[in-house]
Length: 375
Ligand code: HSE
Image (cartoon, rainbow, N blue to C red; front, side):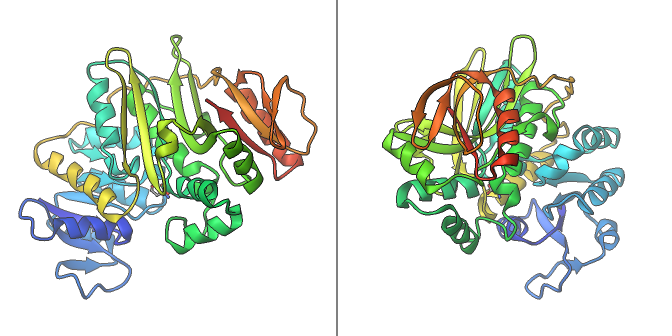
């Protein structure tokens, strides 16, 4: 199959490397703003020239919403299969893109959009065919895991470790989507939609990142034998309502999550009959993420045309799951307190949605306020 590659950044280059020497899947056109002397295929900055060339699959790894959305729609309408690693695009235009692919009789796959090189979405697809998945959760952002792990190991300051993450190429120059949890939120939206057959939006997921975590918070957790990780979670109750959150979470040092170091990912699904299944590995990087893109292309070559699910049931994101929270703030706090922890407190169990409303209000008064759920 001939592939048009839109974007030649880390993932695009990683995917390209993996196709070199293959006969079944060949990159024959690359959309690039600048010339690429190293490439022998068609290289153009004109999407229409790329689309008009003899291609079967359009691989979109440019990121961002626009023009990725316009290019993907045009490719689907032109009868091309589309493989994308773009979680933002897939969250924002989820049903619309799936419907468009179906109407045009072509495949739309996005395995690389959540979990990088981990075959996470494909496993959700597999399990959802024969079992009832009621919870998906885990570490889905490598940048923040690298930062929390380094802060725990070295006692580093947040600012220091963010600069280090940027220097190593984990965090973007603008790290907002990683540290505020938006990247993990997009990944959990896609995961929940496929696992539960629903149509959650980003706004349905209560989200609090690690931007205000301090070295003193981490030191207090360590003293108590606790390890902090950014956890994205979606859980469906028996009445169908969903609690979906992205939040720093404290685990005992012996927990599996605490053993995920550097920029690693670990995700877990919980289903009625098979119980718990966990997946860990590289959640980012050119070759791991490029491998998921390649796997999608190979599945299309083998005849895969369906999306991961054909269910888009509206679901209420009530956020009723009860959790205990560590909260550290200088602003006045009115909540039942169970104990103190470092310079913060631990609340009695409260609904997750309430905790997130509370921390948003606190942060408006005290922009250093931090919160973490306790497991
Ligand atoms: N910024 C993302 C991360 C890249 O750190 O996990 C992979 O989606």
